[in-house]
Length: 72
Image 1 (tube, rainbow, N blue to C red):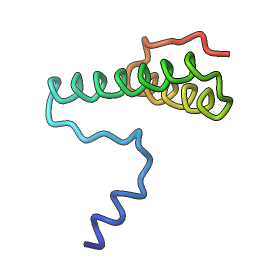
Image 2 (image 1 turned 90 degrees about the vertical axis):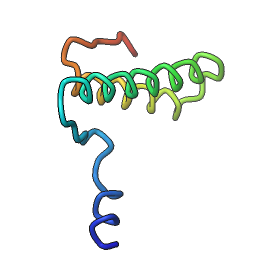
Image 3 (image 1 turned 30 degrees about the vertical axis):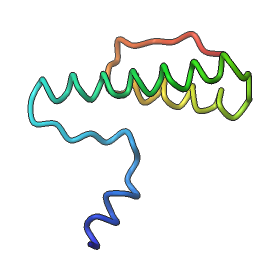
Image 4 (image 1 turned 135 degrees about the horizontal axis):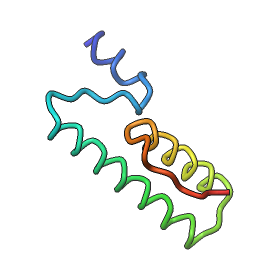
């Protein structure tokens, strides 16, 4: 139980992967998260959602340094 609590407080950027396939799935999940939040921001224009978009873009860039998103 104590170990599980520690895992839940860790940054969402930490990803455990076993192989290249796991790595690709982790990137795909993060891409999906980014697109979901970005779509919500486009629909609403809410400032805190824009902050979430920037955070998701940063997290995705950490997983895939080739990823860039011109978010202002």
